[in-house]
Length: 502
Image (cartoon, rainbow, N blue to C red; front, side, top):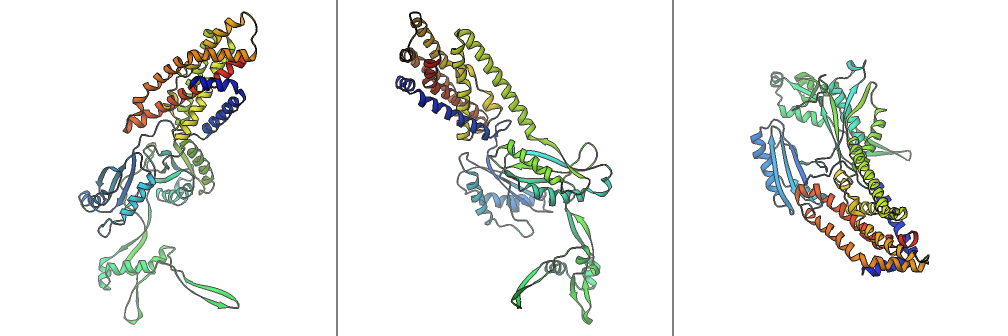
């Protein structure tokens, strides 16, 4: 079989050349579109269910929220593990699925069961966390104020800018799962009722809440046709200021006297409860955000898109406010990939130098040397096809000495046979082809046996599971792809190049 492939290659040089060029083009295209990251993502396949229950103790959260959620989710297929924690006002249930389970199918199953969870009144509806992973935090930034404008913006105003301007604009970026806001105070409109005044007017707290709700909405109606035109009727009732809230009627008394919100409460700005703060450089509180990448996306491309979007957003921010990034994943990726490129280039140059020295022929050395980039392009194509990201572990493990092993054996055997024949006379192309086939056929099985032994060494790594598998399997797969590519090239490209250029 191996001899047949070599014979076909030598006798159909044009076809082999076209296939090799197509493979190289495919490899270059795969390289340009390959997901790039610093390290492999070892996060398991999980969906988080988050429930917010303000003013509830951890014991109540565990009993009233976490346990019902866990019980409802326990029957989902492909579920591997359920873990949770309950804190004051917060419940987080993490559902871990099997690795082969599609994450969107898993989220669909969780979403269908969320509607079945029975929770007490006053507790927010459970929600799923973003489709991200433990390495999804690709970009972190802070909203800063230029000197001379610090007195114009409080941390509450900065948080409003973050929530209503920056976050909303960033969410339109391709590849993002979510943008989490941190620091500052979340602005709220606060109505502080006076119990004594409420009692004197005979008003209960539910009446106040109903009045606020009913008087803060727009309503639609029908339309009036006049002069061949339709005039749509609607009532605008959304509050736009503190005065609008203060003037909301609560109760109608005798004599057509109206009790309004301002008569029984004080209206002002407040903020929601918070359980932490963000500080920076010992200068006090700050406001910022964390950009979460969608699972499976190319982190390098997503970060670059985010930085472009940040520049556009800064043009719309209020005067004196700007965005300062303090964590940028692309910097880590550039350093990691730079290390890989440096090691690969130095390794390739050393191998080429050694080949030329020991083979004693520059053309023979260059033939073997060209196997290095071609096998690497083949490996990159396979990585893109199987969804393996290029990182420090996957690309940094390639050993060019192992890659060119089979090609060296074939070229050296060919050089030996040609040296004997060329002592008598110059060979024709047909005789060159036969000499290459003869020498390659005799040694090809031994070379293939050696390459398969190297591949067998990596089989135990391919069987690893869990965190170890996610960390080391990309390395074994990439090396196996490179060796497989070199094996294919040694049967096709190397004999053709040897017959033409040695």
